[in-house]
Length: 121
Length: 107
Figure 1 (spheres, chains in turn green, brown):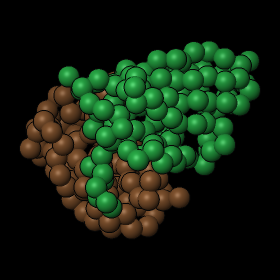
Figure 2 (cartoon, each protein chain N blue to C red):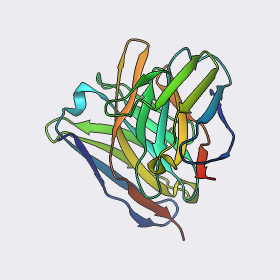
Figure 3 (cartoon, chains in turn brown, red):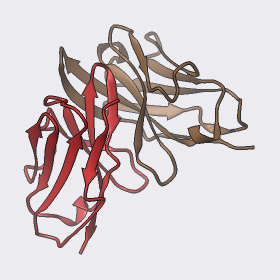
Figure 4 (cartoon, each protein chain N blue to C red):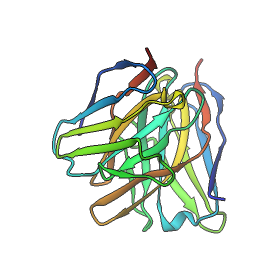
């Protein structure tokens, strides 16, 4: 079964750091692009970061310079390192699998259940 | 940044009727437009990609159309399980943006 399981969320103070994990099963994370999407309480979806199958990384302006996406192929896991956290980073963080071919995108077809990050003093 | 604008914010429709949801991009995204359904407490589910292709396992009552800057999601005959929030999402040059969502509620 194709599945993503996030972990690592928690409650922390502004300025703190946290690393989220996204463990994949049923497919290889290096074969797809892997992305993080967050949802603040009662709000819509916001794209955070993506890693291509080739290992290139891209970030939303709101997190650039503070968040880092990475993957461990041996563990089939994707990570999101979050530094200098702010109250506005409070959200449920989802990882998702995507696929594309050249310019054509096939969408994000597998999602994890999400992990909650709360930044508060 | 490409801004995605969905309308209406809330749509009230009776079961069995047709629902039409709209999504507009601030600049052309070609056909790189996806639609997702999200129910309370659940992760989003991919419905449509490439503006009009149904994802695996998605019923035929869901259809997407459009290209460039104007897109539509149509649900032909609403079932009880279709009442949820729907998001459009564009993907261009490794950057992604979602619309603010349309809440589809029972009339």
